Length: 440
Ligand code: SF4
Image (tube, rainbow, N blue to C red; front, side, top):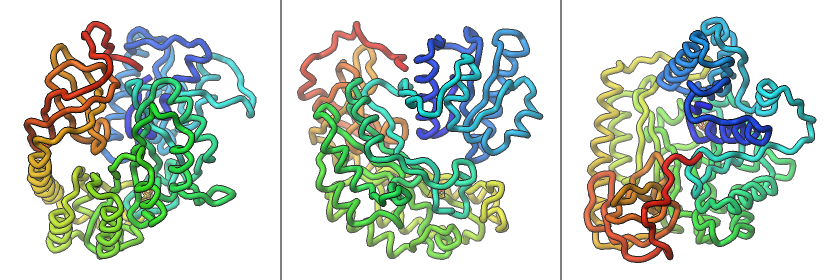
């Protein structure tokens, strides 16, 4: 199973892996040892599509040389371009979408499933102590640049009870941090037969999860949908990390209108202020797109000034890439690639300065850290202000058991890392002999 793309695709891979394991399919570590390779593809942005095609081609080589018997392709790219993939890579035995888990297990094992059979329980590909929790699929927003609704359809929220059940099972299996994901988590529940809100889900999870789940982290908030009830729920529940991942995409009203983002700069500023007032010290992560069609120097400067003013704690930048069949594809992609790259670099330089200043201010403080990785004499973890894979890390100058919380005094810092020493916890310090690096 080779899983590419975002955390939402990772959850799909985990459901499929769970289904395969529950039906006695042996999972191997390397493609060369396998009979069947499944590639879960990503279809969003050129670079991800290229990586997906490259990976399928590598697996196709294994099929040609007889190392594997079957090649299965699933995920966003195959939802979007099934005919092209079948034609261009004839070694592919079957193409499936993102959510055909049962059909894929049937294809591989021959076993049929009834419609009302329970869903497969996931086999985690993240370390055992954290897991993504997908609360909805699809998106109703129709941002002009985005092809995700074309691939994943309109929003379908999962019922609160199903999400709580899954979260409880994950907790029973040792998960201590749950990362809430959706295309737009702030519009969660609007499509349910009885309308619900993300705040309802936050309270339900907080009420029903054991104490061992210390962190609930919210990803992919949409600024237009960040309501006061969600802000209040975040403030009222200790378990919700003082962190929010809220892609704003841009800050020029002209560009935001063309992007169909549903709110302008002033409203965005006001939402962020309300969020910070209710949750002092909250770490804000955002992502931006530079080089969108029609983005002038003045538009870019507006974005630059907004980033400088707001001082996001974590920030990622994409250069605009035209996506087939989107509204923005009808616009003239008129910002030259070198200008897009330069604008991206300028924003990242600014963010590096902001991040370095913020991190310097943490020197001397003692922070709670969850340990993600352990080496021979050091450990690497994260604070509640950082999400795995995308945000910054804390280096700890001693060996601590993976998946444990501890207190670390910060002694040094650079733009994207903190360095510190263990102050206390966890209850058991690790000898280093029982660590596993390659857990599924
Ligand atoms: S909210 Fe996100 S997933 Fe939905 S259309 Fe906009 S960018 Fe795409």
